[in-house]
Amino acid sequence: MIRFILGLTALVMHVSVAASTPPAHGQAAWLLADASTGKIESSHNAQLLLKPASTQKLITTLAGALALGPDWRYQTQVRYRGKLQGDKLVGDLLIDFVGDPSLTREQLLALLNRSGVRSVSGNVLLNQQRFSGYHRGDGWSWNDLSVCYTSPVSALILDRNCVQGALYARSGQPARATVPAHQPVTVSAQVEVLSQAEQKQQFCSLEVDMTPPNQYRLTGCIGPRKEPWPLRFAIQDVDAWGEDLTRWALKQAGIRISGGIKASHIAAADWPSLASHGSPTLKELSRNILEHSDNLYTDSLLRTLGAEHFQQPGSFRNGTQAVRDILLQQANIDLGPSWLADGSGLSAHNLVRGQDLLAVLLVMAQDPRASWLMELLPISGETGTLRYRRSVQNSALKGKIMAKTGTIAHVQNLAGFIDTDTGQRKAFVLLQNGLSISPRHEQNIAAGQGEWPARRFEREWLEAAVFQQAPGSQ
Image (cartoon, rainbow, N blue to C red; front, side):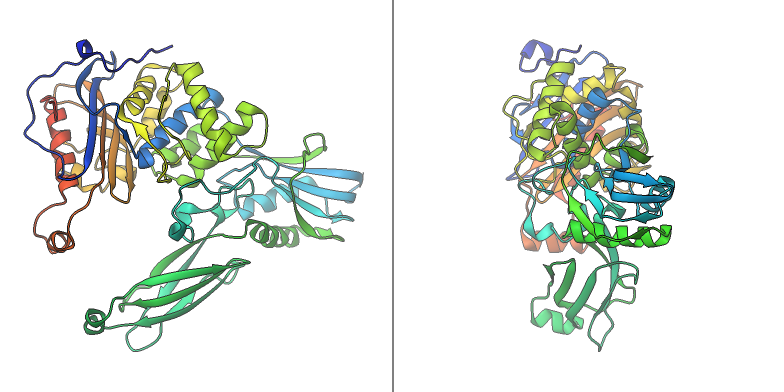
């Protein structure tokens, strides 16, 4: 059990003061500590509540590691009610979806094949009892809901509940939107393609309207482009999506049904199981969460923790409470006034203290139950979300930082571990919120004149940490 205490000035060792200063008008917090002892070497605004963005994934995955362990898997099962007569089922077939974010339509097909059933006299039920409540977190921006990083976190997840397409925008002709023919969605476009001169005369933007069942309509205007614009649509109607993909899988498996394909929310644990599909292990799934910052994987884990901890259908509300309980009971981390609205950090309602994130990092560094999480973090200039992050590309930082990024509107955060030039490992948290510059300043930077203030500060802060200059000490 690790005890983590902040706020005692006797624990804070301030050495030389770095010249770097945070961006004007925003809020910043940081902590730097020895990863093995937890001794704090630099601290500023450690208890200030700030938006964590995707650094919150550290909190969720630690709770998952402590409660479930690295070898835990999602188990999607085919069950039945009625009587089996060889490969004929007189009754209902039930697919018990459990929120496996990695499940594909091909894996569903293989699962149905393994069931051995080829004829169903009743219905095929798409069961989603594992989760309850909303499929999206409080505080998710409404105008992000059409894109795949906000795909619905339902118990029924197939192909990430996401469809990829393309928008063709050629000069002198209307734009054209397409999706692969096998996808059961409809996409249309009424989009003008404007020249550069025309774009200067009118404000140009692209918007999407969504109507059930999974229909998308693009409107507005864009500039011409030789290559197609990639489109990634989040599914809106989960039941319709599940029905369409299950119908495909049943046909491919040669399973005939006399009834229909229907959504259900029933307790079916006592129904006999015919076949089961196990997801990759939590350790493998967590690589998507930490290295690639996958929201769907994280929030499915959050809702699963709610289901496991409270022994009831998982939701965003009981999932966030489960995270708080698990961290307090198993790691003595009290999140106190911090506010969790989801597990991914996507919600604008989330508020976390820098000291909370540092406490999580120290457990990862010191507790064998969670140490496997460290190897899944992105590495500066090499892997994941740090591979191309501009602030960590220079030779002084490349390969020396293992950290979780966190970026939403007006927020740029980083939290993880850094290896100094003398071979010491430090845990650090660097949070920057309220970031904004004038449109003219933004245009100048886009034209190559100057650097984003938040990026500059992050790079200078990390360089000071590598060379042990107690970055930002005050």
